[in-house]
Amino acid sequence: MKFGKIVNFTNMFGQCDYKTLNIDSIVPGSQGYKMDRSCFVFACDCDLPQHEDISELTQAQWQAEKTAIANENSAEQQTIEQKIDDLKSQNAQVILTLVMEGLM
Image (cartoon, rainbow, N blue to C red; front, side, top):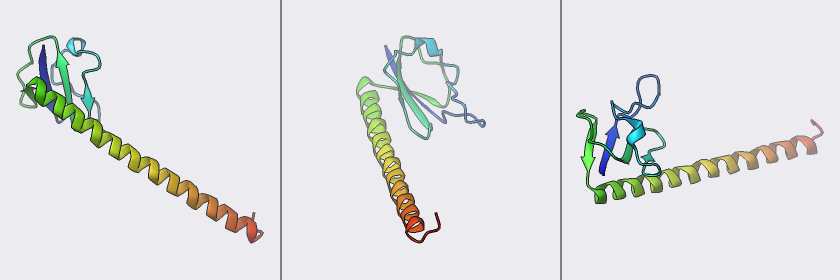
């Protein structure tokens, strides 16, 4: 089994670009995608293709990268959820003010 990382993971149209890696060879559940899709780590059952954006990792490096990506994504998700909660609260306050002033 090989472990790898792809950087510059999206093309100019925002689509995932696996850089000639056969996606059928990727071990399910081994993937780690940054939320901004700037990089992707994975395990696969094939030799890694030669490409400037693909680097081979050790299993320890892959696990560390995958954990770091998961932690970063979790923190970003919490930030997004907090922003949504803040906006809901602000909307409720505006609606309450409008109702109290008879504008609604």
